[in-house]
Length: 112
Image (cartoon, rainbow, N blue to C red; front, side, top):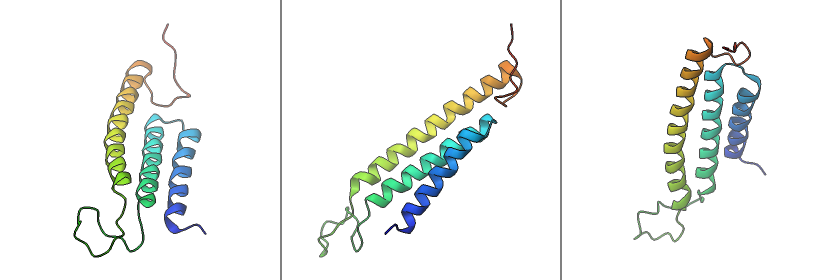
């Protein structure tokens, strides 16, 4: 049975992938890639969750079940990397606009 988190992950990744494939505006493509990153982060966090578990920082707990800290650390790392990649892609969009006069990938004109 598929739970709500996995449906949200599939919806986010599908929405982002459709923006990357079908949009021609570079800013919308960057936004689609950011949405895909959010879907991946949600997937990582939902994989580390255990029902009825406690936070891994509270070690004197009576409950032996603790949520996994590794996916949370990977998610924090992924957020930082996504921020850097988004900034790099937006700077490429600015350079593309300066060179071709448009951020539409179909309306670029080649300078000779």
